[in-house]
Length: 268
Image 1 (cartoon, rainbow, N blue to C red):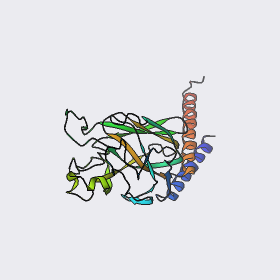
Image 2: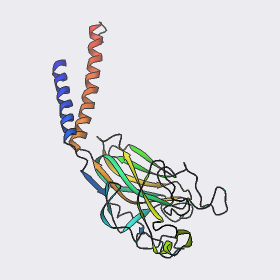
Image 3: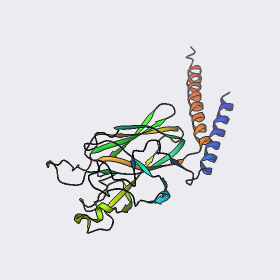
Image 4: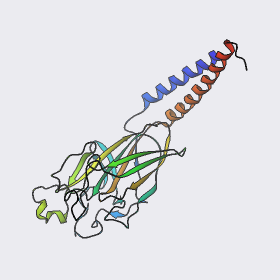
C-alpha cells in the first residue's frame, strides 16, 4: 500500500508541474464593477463643489495601463470618507468567480494632499495611514485583506498639492486633466494634474477559487475609489490538483505515523 500511495503521489506532482507549465499570464478576467458603481466618469465628482471636476477624459473600454489590460466602464466605485459620509462604507459581493494568481487594481483617493498636519480644513493625510482595503473572499469562506495605504499604494488623485510625489508601492499609470483643473491657477504648471494608480496583489492561495471582493473604507479624509480590476487567472485544474495533493499528503502523513508506531512496537 505504501508503494502504491507513493506512486500516486509522484503522479500528482507530475500533473501539477505539467499544468503549471501550460498556465499563461495572458489569461485575464476583467472584474465587472458595473452593478456596484456610484460615480459616472463624465459627471462632476460629489459633493459637486467644482464644476467640471471629473474623469471625463479617461479612455473607456479595453485599455492597457502600466502593462496591465483593464476594461474601463462609464462609472466607478467610490466609498465613503470624512467628506463623503453618504457614500457606502463597504461595497460587497463584487463577483470574481475565478481562480486567480494575482489581481490588479486601478484606483486612487480623493483628498489627502492639500494642507498640512493639524490645519483647520483637515484635508491632509499622513503617509502610512490606512484608508481602506479590499477583502478577497474565497469560495470556502476564508478571506484575505489587501490594505490601501496613503502614500504607499495611492495618493490624492489631484497631484497639484504634493508636486506629484511618488508612492512607495503603487505606480502611477495614468495622468490626465479635466475642465475644472484647466481653469484653476494652481494647476497651470502641469498639463496632467490628475493621476490613477496601479496596485497588484499576489494571491497566496491561487489554488482556491475567489468568489468575490469587498471594497471597504476606513473613514479617513482620503476616500478611495476604484475604476477597474483585472484578475490573472490560474488554471482551475492546477488548483484542484493542489487540493488533491494536500489531501494525499495529509493521508500519507497519518499512515506514516501509524507505521512508525507499529515498527517500534507501539501498536494501539
